Image (tube, rainbow, N blue to C red; front, side):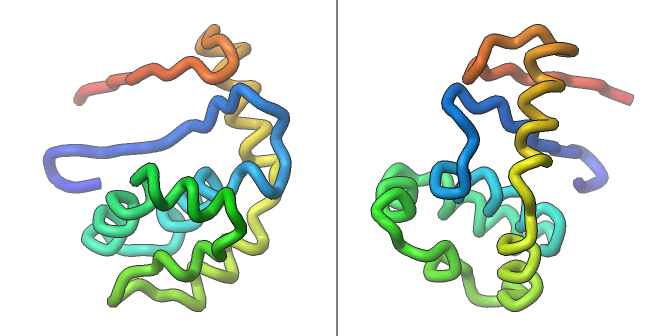
Length: 112
C-alpha cells in the first residue's frame, strides 16, 4: 500500500494444491504479511523471475532468495506455518465468487 496504490494477491492455481508446488504463492503471502513496502517490492521482483521459479521447483529453499534488509526470521516463520488452506480459500473465492476458471488471471480494481 502507498498513498497512491494498494495491491493484494489472490491465488487461483490450476493444479492440485500441495506443499511442493506452492512455494512462490506461500512466499508472496508470507512477504505481504511480514515485510515493509520497499523490501516487499524488491523481494517480489526477485521472486517472480522465471529462473527463481525453476530453482524453487528443483528444491532450492526460498530463504536463499531473501534480500538484504528483510526480516528473514519473521518471514521464514510465517512461510513455514502458512497452511495450504489459505491458498485453497483463495482458489474457492476466485472460482465461486469471481467466476474465474482454474488458473485464470484477472485484475480487480476498486478505486476510491
